[in-house]
Length: 293
Length: 313
Image (cartoon, rainbow over all chains, first blue to last red; front, side, top):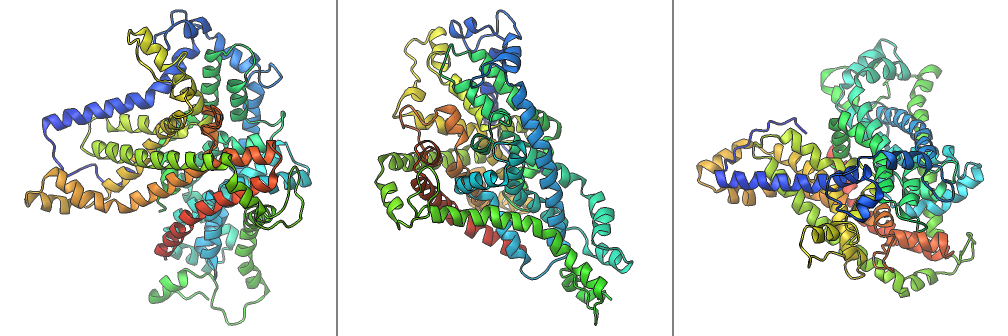
Protein backbone atom coordinates (compact mmCIF):
# COMPACT_ATOMS: atom_id res chain seq x y z
CA UNK A 1 0.00 0.00 0.00
CA UNK A 2 2.69 2.42 0.91
CA UNK A 3 4.89 1.60 -2.04
CA UNK A 4 4.28 4.79 -3.97
CA UNK A 5 5.03 8.12 -2.40
CA UNK A 6 2.34 9.91 -0.49
CA UNK A 7 3.23 12.98 -2.46
CA UNK A 8 0.29 14.39 -4.33
CA UNK A 9 0.18 17.24 -6.76
CA UNK A 10 -3.22 18.42 -5.56
CA UNK A 11 -3.13 21.41 -3.26
CA UNK A 12 -6.07 22.41 -1.17
CA UNK A 13 -7.21 25.59 0.51
CA UNK A 14 -7.57 26.07 4.22
CA UNK A 15 -11.34 25.71 4.36
CA UNK A 16 -11.27 22.61 2.21
CA UNK A 17 -8.65 21.12 4.50
CA UNK A 18 -10.71 21.87 7.58
CA UNK A 19 -13.66 20.17 5.91
CA UNK A 20 -11.55 17.15 5.01
CA UNK A 21 -10.27 16.75 8.56
CA UNK A 22 -13.79 17.10 9.89
CA UNK A 23 -15.07 14.36 7.58
CA UNK A 24 -12.19 12.08 8.41
CA UNK A 25 -12.79 12.49 12.12
CA UNK A 26 -16.51 11.93 11.69
CA UNK A 27 -15.89 8.72 9.87
CA UNK A 28 -13.31 7.60 12.38
CA UNK A 29 -16.02 8.07 15.01
CA UNK A 30 -18.46 6.09 12.91
CA UNK A 31 -16.03 3.19 12.71
CA UNK A 32 -15.03 3.31 16.34
CA UNK A 33 -18.45 3.87 17.87
CA UNK A 34 -20.02 0.39 17.74
CA UNK A 35 -16.93 -1.30 19.08
CA UNK A 36 -16.40 1.41 21.66
CA UNK A 37 -19.95 0.95 22.87
CA UNK A 38 -19.37 -2.78 23.18
CA UNK A 39 -16.29 -2.24 25.31
CA UNK A 40 -17.97 0.42 27.42
CA UNK A 41 -21.05 -1.66 28.11
CA UNK A 42 -19.21 -4.90 28.71
CA UNK A 43 -17.89 -3.51 31.99
CA UNK A 44 -21.24 -2.21 33.27
CA UNK A 45 -23.75 -4.03 35.41
CA UNK A 46 -26.85 -4.94 33.42
CA UNK A 47 -29.07 -2.48 35.29
CA UNK A 48 -26.94 0.39 33.99
CA UNK A 49 -27.63 -0.64 30.38
CA UNK A 50 -31.34 -1.36 30.61
CA UNK A 51 -32.01 1.53 32.93
CA UNK A 52 -29.33 3.91 31.79
CA UNK A 53 -27.56 5.35 28.81
CA UNK A 54 -25.59 3.19 26.44
CA UNK A 55 -23.15 5.95 25.67
CA UNK A 56 -22.32 6.99 29.20
CA UNK A 57 -19.31 5.79 31.11
CA UNK A 58 -19.89 3.01 33.62
CA UNK A 59 -20.75 4.24 37.10
CA UNK A 60 -19.88 0.89 38.59
CA UNK A 61 -16.96 -0.80 36.89
CA UNK A 62 -17.27 -4.58 36.81
CA UNK A 63 -15.57 -7.43 35.01
CA UNK A 64 -18.36 -9.78 35.98
CA UNK A 65 -19.87 -9.88 32.42
CA UNK A 66 -16.49 -10.96 31.06
CA UNK A 67 -16.16 -13.81 33.53
CA UNK A 68 -19.72 -14.79 32.89
CA UNK A 69 -19.31 -14.76 29.11
CA UNK A 70 -16.16 -16.83 29.41
CA UNK A 71 -17.14 -19.27 32.15
CA UNK A 72 -20.79 -19.63 32.88
CA UNK A 73 -23.10 -18.04 30.32
CA UNK A 74 -25.82 -20.24 28.92
CA UNK A 75 -24.83 -21.39 25.42
CA UNK A 76 -27.54 -23.53 23.92
CA UNK A 77 -28.48 -25.87 26.74
CA UNK A 78 -25.25 -25.88 28.72
CA UNK A 79 -24.10 -23.09 31.04
CA UNK A 80 -20.49 -23.45 29.96
CA UNK A 81 -19.65 -19.96 28.83
CA UNK A 82 -17.69 -19.40 25.63
CA UNK A 83 -14.50 -21.00 26.90
CA UNK A 84 -14.88 -24.48 25.38
CA UNK A 85 -15.89 -22.97 22.05
CA UNK A 86 -12.87 -20.72 22.08
CA UNK A 87 -10.70 -23.85 22.30
CA UNK A 88 -12.78 -25.54 19.62
CA UNK A 89 -12.01 -22.63 17.32
CA UNK A 90 -8.29 -22.78 18.10
CA UNK A 91 -8.17 -26.54 17.58
CA UNK A 92 -9.79 -26.03 14.21
CA UNK A 93 -7.86 -22.96 13.12
CA UNK A 94 -4.28 -24.10 13.67
CA UNK A 95 -4.26 -27.27 11.59
CA UNK A 96 -6.45 -25.70 8.90
CA UNK A 97 -4.19 -22.66 8.54
CA UNK A 98 -1.02 -24.73 8.53
CA UNK A 99 -2.17 -27.29 5.99
CA UNK A 100 -3.72 -24.77 3.61
CA UNK A 101 -0.65 -22.53 3.73
CA UNK A 102 1.79 -25.40 3.09
CA UNK A 103 -0.30 -26.66 0.19
CA UNK A 104 -0.70 -23.13 -1.14
CA UNK A 105 3.06 -22.58 -1.08
CA UNK A 106 3.74 -25.81 -2.94
CA UNK A 107 1.01 -25.08 -5.47
CA UNK A 108 2.28 -21.57 -6.06
CA UNK A 109 5.78 -22.93 -6.55
CA UNK A 110 4.65 -25.51 -9.09
CA UNK A 111 2.41 -23.07 -10.93
CA UNK A 112 5.16 -20.51 -11.42
CA UNK A 113 8.45 -22.41 -11.59
CA UNK A 114 7.47 -25.80 -12.98
CA UNK A 115 4.89 -24.74 -15.43
CA UNK A 116 3.19 -27.16 -17.77
CA UNK A 117 0.51 -27.00 -20.40
CA UNK A 118 -2.86 -26.02 -19.02
CA UNK A 119 -1.58 -24.77 -15.69
CA UNK A 120 -3.33 -21.43 -16.04
CA UNK A 121 -6.64 -23.20 -16.53
CA UNK A 122 -6.03 -25.29 -13.43
CA UNK A 123 -5.18 -22.16 -11.48
CA UNK A 124 -8.32 -20.49 -12.79
CA UNK A 125 -10.36 -23.44 -11.54
CA UNK A 126 -8.75 -23.13 -8.11
CA UNK A 127 -9.29 -19.40 -8.05
CA UNK A 128 -12.95 -19.57 -8.95
CA UNK A 129 -13.39 -21.99 -6.05
CA UNK A 130 -12.66 -19.08 -3.68
CA UNK A 131 -15.66 -17.16 -4.82
CA UNK A 132 -18.43 -19.74 -5.07
CA UNK A 133 -21.36 -19.19 -2.73
CA UNK A 134 -20.80 -21.96 -0.23
CA UNK A 135 -24.50 -22.77 -0.21
CA UNK A 136 -23.83 -24.76 -3.36
CA UNK A 137 -21.60 -27.23 -1.49
CA UNK A 138 -23.44 -27.49 1.81
CA UNK A 139 -25.64 -30.49 0.97
CA UNK A 140 -23.01 -32.73 -0.63
CA UNK A 141 -20.45 -31.69 1.99
CA UNK A 142 -22.74 -32.82 4.79
CA UNK A 143 -23.11 -36.18 3.04
CA UNK A 144 -19.41 -36.62 2.39
CA UNK A 145 -18.38 -35.68 5.92
CA UNK A 146 -20.84 -38.26 7.18
CA UNK A 147 -19.48 -40.81 4.73
CA UNK A 148 -15.92 -40.14 5.90
CA UNK A 149 -17.03 -40.44 9.52
CA UNK A 150 -15.90 -36.94 10.44
CA UNK A 151 -19.28 -35.21 10.47
CA UNK A 152 -19.69 -32.82 13.36
CA UNK A 153 -16.04 -33.05 14.33
CA UNK A 154 -13.08 -30.72 14.34
CA UNK A 155 -11.19 -32.76 11.69
CA UNK A 156 -14.24 -32.40 9.47
CA UNK A 157 -14.17 -28.63 9.82
CA UNK A 158 -10.43 -28.60 9.20
CA UNK A 159 -10.96 -30.44 5.95
CA UNK A 160 -13.67 -28.01 4.88
CA UNK A 161 -11.56 -24.96 5.65
CA UNK A 162 -8.48 -26.38 3.96
CA UNK A 163 -10.42 -27.09 0.78
CA UNK A 164 -12.09 -23.70 0.53
CA UNK A 165 -8.98 -21.79 1.59
CA UNK A 166 -6.68 -23.46 -0.92
CA UNK A 167 -7.59 -21.12 -3.75
CA UNK A 168 -6.55 -18.06 -1.80
CA UNK A 169 -3.29 -19.46 -0.42
CA UNK A 170 -2.36 -20.70 -3.90
CA UNK A 171 -3.15 -17.26 -5.31
CA UNK A 172 -0.90 -15.53 -2.77
CA UNK A 173 2.09 -17.76 -3.33
CA UNK A 174 1.64 -17.85 -7.07
CA UNK A 175 1.63 -14.08 -7.35
CA UNK A 176 4.58 -13.82 -5.01
CA UNK A 177 6.69 -16.47 -6.72
CA UNK A 178 5.87 -15.12 -10.15
CA UNK A 179 8.32 -12.26 -9.72
CA UNK A 180 10.95 -14.48 -8.13
CA UNK A 181 13.90 -14.75 -10.55
CA UNK A 182 13.59 -18.02 -12.42
CA UNK A 183 17.30 -17.86 -13.34
CA UNK A 184 18.13 -18.79 -9.75
CA UNK A 185 16.04 -21.92 -10.05
CA UNK A 186 17.72 -22.85 -13.33
CA UNK A 187 21.14 -22.35 -11.83
CA UNK A 188 20.27 -24.56 -8.88
CA UNK A 189 18.93 -27.18 -11.26
CA UNK A 190 22.18 -27.22 -13.17
CA UNK A 191 23.92 -27.76 -9.86
CA UNK A 192 21.77 -30.84 -9.45
CA UNK A 193 19.21 -29.56 -6.95
CA UNK A 194 15.84 -31.23 -7.22
CA UNK A 195 12.29 -30.01 -6.80
CA UNK A 196 12.09 -30.11 -3.02
CA UNK A 197 15.64 -28.99 -2.41
CA UNK A 198 15.06 -25.86 -4.47
CA UNK A 199 11.81 -25.20 -2.67
CA UNK A 200 13.36 -25.71 0.74
CA UNK A 201 16.65 -23.91 0.17
CA UNK A 202 15.75 -21.15 -2.28
CA UNK A 203 12.04 -20.42 -2.28
CA UNK A 204 11.11 -20.83 1.36
CA UNK A 205 13.84 -18.67 2.89
CA UNK A 206 12.58 -15.70 0.90
CA UNK A 207 8.88 -16.39 1.41
CA UNK A 208 8.59 -14.84 4.86
CA UNK A 209 6.25 -11.97 4.02
CA UNK A 210 3.87 -14.00 1.91
CA UNK A 211 3.70 -16.75 4.53
CA UNK A 212 2.64 -14.10 7.03
CA UNK A 213 0.03 -12.78 4.61
CA UNK A 214 -1.35 -16.23 3.95
CA UNK A 215 -1.39 -17.26 7.60
CA UNK A 216 -3.13 -14.08 8.67
CA UNK A 217 -5.69 -14.26 5.91
CA UNK A 218 -6.51 -17.87 6.63
CA UNK A 219 -6.54 -17.33 10.37
CA UNK A 220 -8.94 -14.40 10.09
CA UNK A 221 -11.22 -16.13 7.61
CA UNK A 222 -11.42 -19.43 9.41
CA UNK A 223 -11.77 -17.90 12.85
CA UNK A 224 -14.58 -15.68 11.61
CA UNK A 225 -16.39 -18.35 9.63
CA UNK A 226 -19.95 -18.97 10.68
CA UNK A 227 -21.67 -20.85 7.87
CA UNK A 228 -19.52 -23.98 7.96
CA UNK A 229 -19.43 -24.00 11.74
CA UNK A 230 -23.18 -23.70 11.94
CA UNK A 231 -23.71 -26.39 9.30
CA UNK A 232 -21.13 -29.03 10.11
CA UNK A 233 -20.23 -28.76 13.80
CA UNK A 234 -21.88 -30.39 16.76
CA UNK A 235 -21.56 -29.39 20.40
CA UNK A 236 -18.03 -30.75 20.81
CA UNK A 237 -16.65 -28.90 17.83
CA UNK A 238 -18.74 -25.73 17.53
CA UNK A 239 -16.54 -22.73 16.88
CA UNK A 240 -16.65 -19.44 18.71
CA UNK A 241 -18.80 -17.59 16.17
CA UNK A 242 -21.59 -20.15 16.38
CA UNK A 243 -21.50 -20.13 20.18
CA UNK A 244 -21.60 -16.34 20.23
CA UNK A 245 -24.62 -16.34 17.96
CA UNK A 246 -26.34 -18.87 20.22
CA UNK A 247 -25.56 -16.71 23.22
CA UNK A 248 -26.86 -13.50 21.68
CA UNK A 249 -29.92 -14.82 19.90
CA UNK A 250 -31.18 -17.18 22.58
CA UNK A 251 -34.69 -16.11 23.36
CA UNK A 252 -34.98 -17.52 26.86
CA UNK A 253 -34.40 -15.54 30.04
CA UNK A 254 -33.23 -12.01 30.56
CA UNK A 255 -31.14 -10.50 27.75
CA UNK A 256 -27.80 -9.85 29.34
CA UNK A 257 -26.47 -7.27 26.96
CA UNK A 258 -23.27 -6.73 28.92
CA UNK A 259 -22.47 -10.45 28.70
CA UNK A 260 -23.25 -10.43 24.97
CA UNK A 261 -20.87 -7.54 24.44
CA UNK A 262 -18.12 -9.18 26.46
CA UNK A 263 -18.66 -12.38 24.49
CA UNK A 264 -18.53 -10.54 21.18
CA UNK A 265 -15.26 -8.90 22.15
CA UNK A 266 -13.86 -12.27 23.20
CA UNK A 267 -14.79 -13.64 19.79
CA UNK A 268 -13.22 -10.64 18.08
CA UNK A 269 -10.06 -10.53 20.17
CA UNK A 270 -7.82 -13.03 18.34
CA UNK A 271 -8.36 -11.55 14.90
CA UNK A 272 -8.22 -8.03 16.27
CA UNK A 273 -4.90 -8.76 17.97
CA UNK A 274 -3.55 -10.15 14.72
CA UNK A 275 -4.75 -7.01 12.97
CA UNK A 276 -3.10 -4.72 15.49
CA UNK A 277 0.19 -6.63 15.42
CA UNK A 278 0.36 -7.30 11.69
CA UNK A 279 -2.23 -5.05 10.06
CA UNK A 280 0.08 -4.32 7.16
CA UNK A 281 0.09 -7.95 6.11
CA UNK A 282 -3.63 -8.28 6.65
CA UNK A 283 -4.26 -5.41 4.26
CA UNK A 284 -1.86 -6.90 1.77
CA UNK A 285 -3.78 -10.15 1.88
CA UNK A 286 -7.06 -8.33 1.36
CA UNK A 287 -5.68 -6.45 -1.58
CA UNK A 288 -4.13 -9.50 -3.18
CA UNK A 289 -7.49 -11.19 -2.93
CA UNK A 290 -9.08 -8.41 -4.93
CA UNK A 291 -6.64 -6.55 -7.16
CA UNK A 292 -4.40 -9.44 -7.91
CA UNK A 293 -0.69 -8.71 -8.05
CA UNK B 1 21.01 -29.64 -20.25
CA UNK B 2 18.98 -26.54 -19.77
CA UNK B 3 19.00 -23.87 -22.38
CA UNK B 4 20.62 -20.89 -20.79
CA UNK B 5 21.31 -18.61 -23.72
CA UNK B 6 20.10 -15.15 -22.97
CA UNK B 7 17.51 -14.79 -25.66
CA UNK B 8 15.67 -17.94 -24.78
CA UNK B 9 15.86 -17.66 -21.02
CA UNK B 10 12.61 -15.80 -20.87
CA UNK B 11 10.94 -18.42 -23.01
CA UNK B 12 12.47 -21.47 -21.45
CA UNK B 13 12.15 -20.05 -18.00
CA UNK B 14 8.44 -20.62 -17.97
CA UNK B 15 8.66 -24.26 -18.85
CA UNK B 16 10.68 -26.52 -16.66
CA UNK B 17 11.01 -29.44 -18.99
CA UNK B 18 14.72 -29.83 -19.66
CA UNK B 19 15.57 -30.17 -23.31
CA UNK B 20 17.50 -33.40 -22.88
CA UNK B 21 17.55 -35.77 -25.80
CA UNK B 22 16.76 -38.95 -23.90
CA UNK B 23 15.48 -38.38 -20.40
CA UNK B 24 16.47 -41.24 -18.13
CA UNK B 25 14.17 -42.62 -15.47
CA UNK B 26 15.41 -40.24 -12.80
CA UNK B 27 14.80 -37.17 -14.92
CA UNK B 28 11.38 -38.38 -15.83
CA UNK B 29 10.58 -38.92 -12.17
CA UNK B 30 11.88 -35.45 -11.47
CA UNK B 31 9.57 -34.08 -14.09
CA UNK B 32 6.65 -35.88 -12.56
CA UNK B 33 7.17 -34.49 -9.06
CA UNK B 34 5.63 -31.05 -9.66
CA UNK B 35 2.46 -32.58 -10.99
CA UNK B 36 2.36 -35.06 -8.14
CA UNK B 37 2.71 -32.23 -5.66
CA UNK B 38 -0.10 -30.29 -7.26
CA UNK B 39 -2.43 -33.25 -7.57
CA UNK B 40 -3.75 -33.55 -3.98
CA UNK B 41 -4.91 -29.92 -4.02
CA UNK B 42 -6.31 -30.33 -7.46
CA UNK B 43 -8.16 -33.48 -6.49
CA UNK B 44 -9.62 -31.74 -3.44
CA UNK B 45 -10.82 -28.82 -5.54
CA UNK B 46 -12.19 -30.99 -8.30
CA UNK B 47 -14.15 -33.19 -5.91
CA UNK B 48 -15.16 -30.74 -3.20
CA UNK B 49 -15.88 -27.79 -5.45
CA UNK B 50 -16.74 -28.94 -8.95
CA UNK B 51 -17.97 -32.41 -8.03
CA UNK B 52 -20.16 -30.90 -5.34
CA UNK B 53 -21.49 -28.27 -7.70
CA UNK B 54 -22.53 -30.97 -10.14
CA UNK B 55 -24.14 -32.92 -7.32
CA UNK B 56 -26.09 -29.88 -6.11
CA UNK B 57 -27.18 -29.02 -9.62
CA UNK B 58 -28.39 -32.57 -10.04
CA UNK B 59 -30.24 -32.44 -6.71
CA UNK B 60 -32.01 -29.31 -7.86
CA UNK B 61 -33.68 -31.43 -10.55
CA UNK B 62 -34.84 -34.08 -8.08
CA UNK B 63 -37.67 -34.28 -5.60
CA UNK B 64 -35.31 -34.45 -2.58
CA UNK B 65 -36.82 -33.43 0.70
CA UNK B 66 -35.10 -34.42 3.97
CA UNK B 67 -32.53 -36.60 2.24
CA UNK B 68 -31.27 -36.65 -1.32
CA UNK B 69 -33.30 -38.86 -3.61
CA UNK B 70 -32.52 -39.32 -7.26
CA UNK B 71 -35.84 -39.14 -9.06
CA UNK B 72 -35.73 -36.69 -11.93
CA UNK B 73 -38.45 -34.04 -11.73
CA UNK B 74 -37.16 -31.65 -14.35
CA UNK B 75 -37.58 -27.97 -13.67
CA UNK B 76 -40.28 -28.43 -11.08
CA UNK B 77 -38.17 -27.08 -8.21
CA UNK B 78 -37.29 -23.96 -10.15
CA UNK B 79 -40.91 -23.37 -11.06
CA UNK B 80 -41.91 -23.78 -7.43
CA UNK B 81 -39.05 -21.58 -6.30
CA UNK B 82 -40.05 -18.66 -8.45
CA UNK B 83 -43.65 -18.97 -7.39
CA UNK B 84 -42.72 -18.77 -3.69
CA UNK B 85 -43.35 -15.40 -2.10
CA UNK B 86 -40.60 -16.19 0.36
CA UNK B 87 -38.08 -16.38 -2.50
CA UNK B 88 -39.29 -13.22 -4.22
CA UNK B 89 -38.91 -11.38 -0.91
CA UNK B 90 -35.38 -12.76 -0.63
CA UNK B 91 -34.53 -11.65 -4.17
CA UNK B 92 -36.00 -8.21 -3.67
CA UNK B 93 -34.12 -7.81 -0.40
CA UNK B 94 -30.88 -8.87 -2.03
CA UNK B 95 -31.50 -6.31 -4.76
CA UNK B 96 -32.04 -3.49 -2.27
CA UNK B 97 -29.20 -4.63 -0.07
CA UNK B 98 -26.65 -5.25 -2.83
CA UNK B 99 -27.49 -2.04 -4.69
CA UNK B 100 -27.22 0.22 -1.69
CA UNK B 101 -24.32 -1.64 -0.17
CA UNK B 102 -22.22 -1.46 -3.32
CA UNK B 103 -23.12 2.17 -4.03
CA UNK B 104 -22.56 3.44 -0.49
CA UNK B 105 -19.36 1.46 0.08
CA UNK B 106 -17.96 2.74 -3.20
CA UNK B 107 -18.91 6.34 -2.41
CA UNK B 108 -17.53 6.26 1.13
CA UNK B 109 -14.47 4.30 0.05
CA UNK B 110 -13.64 6.70 -2.76
CA UNK B 111 -14.37 9.76 -0.63
CA UNK B 112 -12.21 8.65 2.25
CA UNK B 113 -9.42 7.61 -0.08
CA UNK B 114 -9.40 11.00 -1.79
CA UNK B 115 -9.46 12.76 1.58
CA UNK B 116 -6.65 10.62 2.96
CA UNK B 117 -4.62 11.31 -0.16
CA UNK B 118 -4.33 15.04 0.66
CA UNK B 119 -1.14 14.75 2.73
CA UNK B 120 -3.19 14.24 5.84
CA UNK B 121 -1.49 14.40 9.18
CA UNK B 122 -2.24 11.25 11.10
CA UNK B 123 -2.99 9.17 8.05
CA UNK B 124 -1.13 6.26 9.58
CA UNK B 125 -3.40 6.59 12.58
CA UNK B 126 -6.68 6.97 10.71
CA UNK B 127 -6.23 4.26 8.11
CA UNK B 128 -6.21 1.35 10.55
CA UNK B 129 -9.30 2.78 12.25
CA UNK B 130 -11.18 2.80 8.95
CA UNK B 131 -10.11 -0.74 8.21
CA UNK B 132 -10.30 -2.66 11.47
CA UNK B 133 -13.95 -3.78 11.12
CA UNK B 134 -12.78 -5.93 8.22
CA UNK B 135 -10.90 -8.10 10.73
CA UNK B 136 -14.05 -8.82 12.71
CA UNK B 137 -16.49 -11.64 12.26
CA UNK B 138 -19.87 -10.69 10.82
CA UNK B 139 -21.37 -12.25 13.93
CA UNK B 140 -19.51 -9.72 16.08
CA UNK B 141 -20.56 -6.88 13.79
CA UNK B 142 -24.12 -8.14 13.89
CA UNK B 143 -24.14 -8.27 17.67
CA UNK B 144 -22.73 -4.78 18.02
CA UNK B 145 -25.23 -3.23 15.62
CA UNK B 146 -28.15 -5.31 16.80
CA UNK B 147 -27.99 -3.75 20.25
CA UNK B 148 -26.79 -0.36 19.12
CA UNK B 149 -29.82 -0.01 16.84
CA UNK B 150 -32.24 -1.57 19.30
CA UNK B 151 -34.72 1.18 20.14
CA UNK B 152 -35.09 -0.09 23.70
CA UNK B 153 -31.47 0.31 24.80
CA UNK B 154 -29.51 1.73 21.86
CA UNK B 155 -29.36 4.91 19.86
CA UNK B 156 -33.02 5.89 20.18
CA UNK B 157 -33.03 5.33 23.92
CA UNK B 158 -29.83 7.35 24.29
CA UNK B 159 -31.23 10.26 22.30
CA UNK B 160 -34.33 10.28 24.48
CA UNK B 161 -32.17 10.38 27.59
CA UNK B 162 -30.19 13.23 26.09
CA UNK B 163 -33.42 15.18 25.80
CA UNK B 164 -34.34 14.59 22.16
CA UNK B 165 -37.71 13.07 23.04
CA UNK B 166 -39.12 12.85 19.52
CA UNK B 167 -36.10 11.07 18.08
CA UNK B 168 -37.16 7.87 16.42
CA UNK B 169 -34.94 5.19 14.97
CA UNK B 170 -36.56 1.78 15.12
CA UNK B 171 -35.68 0.52 11.66
CA UNK B 172 -34.42 -2.78 13.00
CA UNK B 173 -37.89 -3.53 14.35
CA UNK B 174 -39.70 -2.18 11.32
CA UNK B 175 -40.57 -4.59 8.52
CA UNK B 176 -40.21 -1.90 5.89
CA UNK B 177 -36.86 -0.60 7.01
CA UNK B 178 -35.04 -3.56 8.63
CA UNK B 179 -33.16 -4.36 5.44
CA UNK B 180 -31.52 -0.94 5.58
CA UNK B 181 -29.99 -1.74 8.97
CA UNK B 182 -28.27 -4.68 7.29
CA UNK B 183 -26.89 -2.19 4.78
CA UNK B 184 -25.62 0.07 7.57
CA UNK B 185 -23.82 -2.73 9.37
CA UNK B 186 -22.38 -4.18 6.17
CA UNK B 187 -21.15 -0.76 5.01
CA UNK B 188 -19.55 -0.26 8.40
CA UNK B 189 -17.69 -3.51 8.02
CA UNK B 190 -16.38 -3.23 4.46
CA UNK B 191 -16.21 0.41 3.40
CA UNK B 192 -12.75 0.80 4.92
CA UNK B 193 -11.53 -2.00 2.74
CA UNK B 194 -12.88 -0.27 -0.35
CA UNK B 195 -11.08 2.86 0.85
CA UNK B 196 -7.83 0.89 0.92
CA UNK B 197 -8.40 -0.32 -2.64
CA UNK B 198 -9.01 3.19 -3.94
CA UNK B 199 -6.11 4.59 -1.95
CA UNK B 200 -3.78 2.07 -3.54
CA UNK B 201 -5.16 3.14 -6.92
CA UNK B 202 -4.68 6.84 -6.15
CA UNK B 203 -1.10 6.30 -5.03
CA UNK B 204 -0.36 4.61 -8.30
CA UNK B 205 -1.32 7.60 -10.43
CA UNK B 206 1.48 9.42 -12.15
CA UNK B 207 1.95 12.84 -10.57
CA UNK B 208 3.54 14.34 -13.68
CA UNK B 209 0.23 14.34 -15.54
CA UNK B 210 -1.44 16.09 -12.61
CA UNK B 211 1.29 18.70 -12.42
CA UNK B 212 0.98 19.34 -16.13
CA UNK B 213 -2.79 19.71 -15.79
CA UNK B 214 -2.28 22.09 -12.90
CA UNK B 215 -0.01 24.27 -14.97
CA UNK B 216 -2.72 24.34 -17.61
CA UNK B 217 -5.00 25.78 -14.95
CA UNK B 218 -7.21 22.79 -14.21
CA UNK B 219 -9.16 23.07 -10.97
CA UNK B 220 -8.96 20.36 -8.34
CA UNK B 221 -12.51 19.33 -9.11
CA UNK B 222 -11.75 18.98 -12.78
CA UNK B 223 -8.55 17.10 -12.12
CA UNK B 224 -10.43 14.54 -10.09
CA UNK B 225 -13.31 14.33 -12.50
CA UNK B 226 -11.34 14.28 -15.73
CA UNK B 227 -8.01 12.71 -14.88
CA UNK B 228 -7.86 10.94 -11.55
CA UNK B 229 -11.18 9.16 -11.20
CA UNK B 230 -11.14 7.81 -14.77
CA UNK B 231 -7.73 6.31 -14.00
CA UNK B 232 -9.20 4.44 -11.06
CA UNK B 233 -11.24 2.22 -13.35
CA UNK B 234 -9.51 -1.01 -12.32
CA UNK B 235 -10.15 -0.17 -8.66
CA UNK B 236 -13.82 0.50 -9.38
CA UNK B 237 -14.08 -2.80 -11.17
CA UNK B 238 -12.41 -4.76 -8.38
CA UNK B 239 -14.52 -3.02 -5.76
CA UNK B 240 -17.67 -3.85 -7.68
CA UNK B 241 -16.74 -7.48 -8.13
CA UNK B 242 -15.68 -8.01 -4.54
CA UNK B 243 -18.65 -6.18 -3.06
CA UNK B 244 -21.23 -7.86 -5.24
CA UNK B 245 -19.86 -11.28 -4.44
CA UNK B 246 -19.83 -10.43 -0.72
CA UNK B 247 -23.40 -9.17 -0.98
CA UNK B 248 -24.70 -12.33 -2.64
CA UNK B 249 -22.89 -14.51 -0.12
CA UNK B 250 -23.89 -12.51 2.95
CA UNK B 251 -25.45 -14.83 5.44
CA UNK B 252 -23.76 -14.43 8.82
CA UNK B 253 -24.53 -10.76 9.16
CA UNK B 254 -28.23 -11.21 8.50
CA UNK B 255 -28.40 -14.12 10.92
CA UNK B 256 -26.67 -12.20 13.68
CA UNK B 257 -28.31 -8.83 13.10
CA UNK B 258 -31.94 -9.66 12.41
CA UNK B 259 -32.20 -13.43 11.98
CA UNK B 260 -34.05 -12.73 8.73
CA UNK B 261 -36.75 -10.86 10.59
CA UNK B 262 -38.84 -9.14 11.68
CA UNK B 263 -41.05 -11.71 9.98
CA UNK B 264 -39.30 -12.30 6.68
CA UNK B 265 -38.33 -8.67 6.22
CA UNK B 266 -34.60 -9.32 5.88
CA UNK B 267 -34.65 -12.74 4.31
CA UNK B 268 -31.97 -13.06 1.59
CA UNK B 269 -31.18 -15.96 -0.77
CA UNK B 270 -28.45 -17.29 1.53
CA UNK B 271 -30.78 -17.53 4.52
CA UNK B 272 -33.55 -18.86 2.29
CA UNK B 273 -31.36 -21.66 1.04
CA UNK B 274 -30.36 -22.64 4.55
CA UNK B 275 -33.85 -22.72 5.98
CA UNK B 276 -35.42 -24.55 3.03
CA UNK B 277 -32.68 -27.15 2.96
CA UNK B 278 -32.07 -27.80 6.63
CA UNK B 279 -35.14 -26.76 8.59
CA UNK B 280 -38.03 -26.98 6.14
CA UNK B 281 -36.81 -30.20 4.54
CA UNK B 282 -37.27 -28.99 0.99
CA UNK B 283 -33.82 -29.95 -0.21
CA UNK B 284 -34.71 -29.85 -3.91
CA UNK B 285 -35.87 -26.26 -3.65
CA UNK B 286 -32.93 -25.37 -1.42
CA UNK B 287 -30.53 -26.79 -4.00
CA UNK B 288 -32.22 -24.88 -6.82
CA UNK B 289 -31.86 -21.62 -4.87
CA UNK B 290 -28.16 -22.37 -4.35
CA UNK B 291 -27.78 -22.95 -8.08
CA UNK B 292 -29.32 -19.55 -8.79
CA UNK B 293 -26.88 -17.95 -6.34
CA UNK B 294 -23.95 -19.71 -7.98
CA UNK B 295 -25.00 -18.63 -11.45
CA UNK B 296 -25.32 -15.03 -10.34
CA UNK B 297 -21.86 -15.01 -8.85
CA UNK B 298 -20.39 -16.89 -11.80
CA UNK B 299 -21.84 -14.32 -14.18
CA UNK B 300 -19.77 -11.69 -12.37
CA UNK B 301 -16.66 -13.62 -11.38
CA UNK B 302 -15.92 -15.72 -14.45
CA UNK B 303 -15.42 -12.84 -16.90
CA UNK B 304 -13.44 -10.95 -14.27
CA UNK B 305 -11.11 -13.81 -13.42
CA UNK B 306 -10.74 -14.67 -17.08
CA UNK B 307 -9.68 -11.12 -17.89
CA UNK B 308 -7.31 -10.96 -14.92
CA UNK B 309 -5.61 -14.23 -15.78
CA UNK B 310 -5.25 -13.27 -19.43
CA UNK B 311 -3.63 -9.96 -18.62
CA UNK B 312 -0.99 -11.73 -16.58
CA UNK B 313 0.34 -13.64 -19.55
